Length: 256
View 1 (cartoon, rainbow, N blue to C red):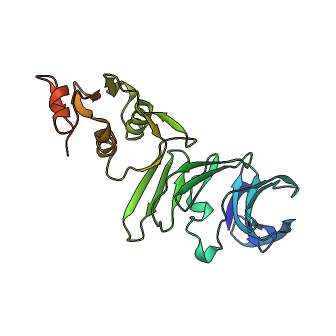
View 2: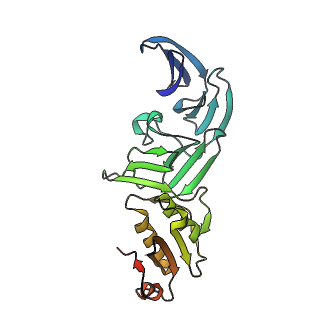
View 3: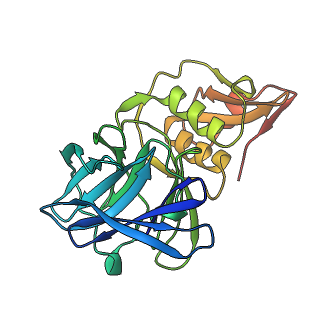
C-alpha cells in the first residue's frame, strides 16, 4: 500500500494488484468509501511510489513508469538496469518507510542505482553494502539505513553523485561535511592532486576513521590544529609520514 494525499476529509491510497494500479479512498473515520482501477498495464507491478499527485511504478519487466494519478495516463516508460523483486524476496524497504525526495535508491550486486522520479533516468555509483537485509533511503540526507546479514546496523553515505572519478581533496571535503564538519573546519596543505573513484561509504564508525584509512595509502597525514581538521601531504612514506608533517606545537594527530 502506497500512501497518497488527503483531500478534505478523505484519504487516498494506491496499491498494485498484478498489472493494475488501484486507488482506494477512505473516509475521515477510516472506513472504506470506494476503489478505482486507475491504470491497467501489460506487465505486473512490483513497486509503487507516490510523487506529487502521480504514481511512479516499477514492473516485472525491468521498467519504470510514471502514471498520472488522476487520469491514469502513462507519462513515461523507461528501462532500468535492475529488477525489483517480489515482496517476499525484496530487500528494498516499503515506500511508506522511506523518505524519497527526487530518487529511488536500489542495490543489486556491488552497484547502487538511483532512479529519478520525475524523468525515470537512472544513474549508478560503484559500491554498496554487502549482503544487506531490508534497507531504507533518506533522500534528504543521502543516508542509507540497513543491517548486514549478521544483524549489524549500518549507515551508508553516498559520497559521489554520479560514480565518476574526482579529486581526492573533493572526496575528503564531501566526506567530512557529511559527518557534520563545516567547510571552514577542513583544510588541505601540500601538493594533494590525487584522483579517487566515487563510492558508497559506510559512515557508521565515523568519518574521521574513514578519512584516516583513505589517506594512509597516499601518505597524507590527518591531524587537528586550532579547531580545524588538516590533511597534509607527508614528506615520506610509512610510519614517518605523521612526524614529518606535524608542527612542533599546536598540532594534534588524528590517530586510532
